[in-house]
Length: 245
Image (tube, rainbow, N blue to C red; front, side, top):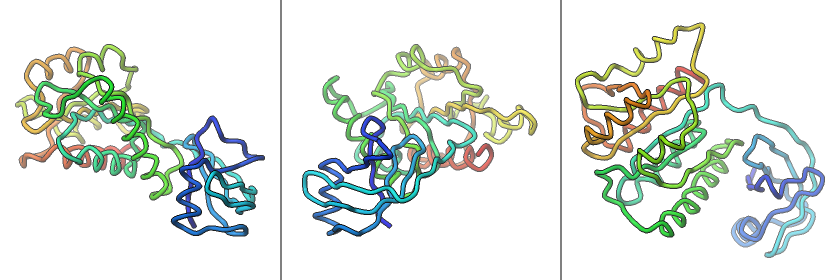
């Protein structure tokens, strides 16, 4: 069954409708018409099965058939990801959504190749937010992750929320296995919020690593094989999803 996104500000369970962009997909791509059924969600856990009442390019009117609320995952995971070059960031965003990340914070580390103006970063943020919405539509996730504006690690930490556990992937000698870090909490008291930072190719600089440690990040190793940044992000999220959700 097709899935469509209705943002929270437009979500009214008694009067559901698709905006122009979603209507284009429904009408012009999927050729939906009155009587067809679909699923809509608002990105904050609400989902409804609906029937198309009226379909047009400027909007699609819907009739609600069922309504339910999905609970968020047990642990709120934030991925702080150094922006890679090319389209790898979009891949990371898509897979992070599938793996249950609640937030993604793009980081402008010293070794980040991708740079740009503030306006360019704002455009990318909007684009990346759309990427996670599309990923939610595909994978059945009813909670849309928040994509933060791109910031330097220092600016991110200065504005960051508090977390039960803060981790940073590291190639340094003091890094411990991820499962060992999680075991420090014990089975009875698992963290409810986790920050995991993943650096660029070549890792974070020593200064960035020292900064992260000063804010409470614990270095973790991802094994003897050096992973590409996108692989490292998915590895960390997969382990956290398996252990904490």
